[in-house]
Image 1 (cartoon, rainbow, N blue to C red):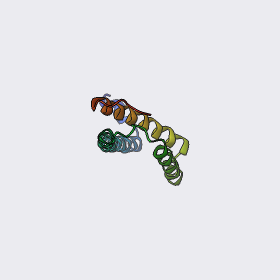
Image 2 (cartoon, rainbow, N blue to C red):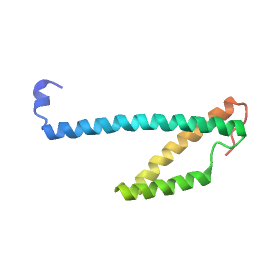
Image 3 (cartoon, helix red, strand yellow):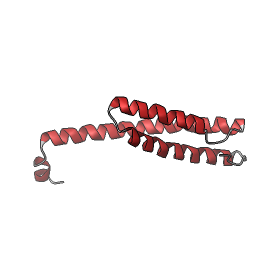
Image 4 (spheres, helix red, strand yellow):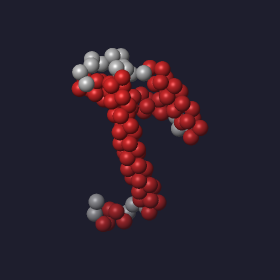
Length: 107
């Protein structure tokens, strides 16, 4: 973006975009930390011979996240879809960990 194009952008818009960029960076770092924790869970499950998926826990987490979203003014349906996406990826990681441990993935 040229200097002329950038100067045409209102300062308030640039400030809002900077805030969004900071939040996006924080989200990426939080997701990285979350996946580090879930990788550890996957190793523990594989060592204990537990299945990669835990439908009861997943249901409780979804209900919890929907309630948190509602309290925060975020669409609970969106929050549920977001968590479902993350859970699917976590299960995929857990299946890979179990395969590396030589135990077939259970569901």
